[in-house]
Length: 231
Ligand code: ATP
Image (cartoon, helix red, strand yellow):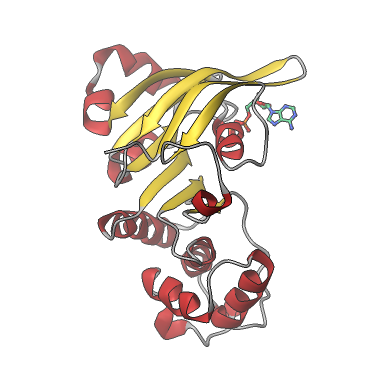
C-alpha cells in the first residue's frame, strides 16, 4: 500500500541554525508514527513543514503519493497548538465556532468527532467544567472535524496530569484501531514505546533511524541515544 506520507531529503535552517538536515522517511498507513527526539531536535519544525505552515529550504514531501492538493489536505487533521476554546461555552458550541472558522465538515461531523473522542455524553457541558484530559480530547475532536484519515499531533500529552496522559494515549490507540493514521511528536521514549507502532528518531535535526518500534528500540546501537538524549 502507498505510504501516507513520504519525506525526501527535507532540510530547514533558521539563519545559521540548521534545524533539519536531509530528513527522509515514510509513514505507512494505519500506523501510530512517533517522531521522537529531545527538545530542539527539529520535531515541531518537521510537523510545521508537512502541514505547510513552514517552507523547507530543500527537499520535498508527498501526501498519499502526491504533492499537496486541497482535496488531499482535507484528509489531514492537525493539532500543533492548543486551540482557544471559550470557557463559558459547551463542547458542542466550541466546536461549532471552530468549524465555522476552519470550514471543515458539517454539523453532523461535530457529533461524529465528539463520539470518536468519547465526549458525546458531555457535549452540552461547559468547557470550564472539563478536566485537562477532556480539554485535550476536545482539541483532538476539533482536529477530527471533517473526518480526516490522518492526524498530526505535536506532543499531545504535554502539560497533562497522569489521568489526562493515560486518556490521550488510550485515545490515540483507539483512533488507530478505528482506521486513522496518527503522526505524533514526542520527547518521551516510554510514550513512544506504549503508543506508537513506528518511529523516526531525530537528534539535532538528523534522522538517526526509523522503522517498527519493536525493532528500532531493541537496537543495541541506540542505547547511548536512548540514555543520553531522550528523557
Ligand atoms: P521542542 O520540543 O523544544 O519544541 P523540537 O524538537 O520541536 O523542540 P524545533 O522547535 O523544531 O525542535 O527546533 C529545532 C531547532 O530550531 C532548535 O535549535 C530551535 O532553537 C530552532 N528554532 C525553532 N524555531 C525557530 C525560529 N522560529 N527561529 C530560530 N530558530 C528556531
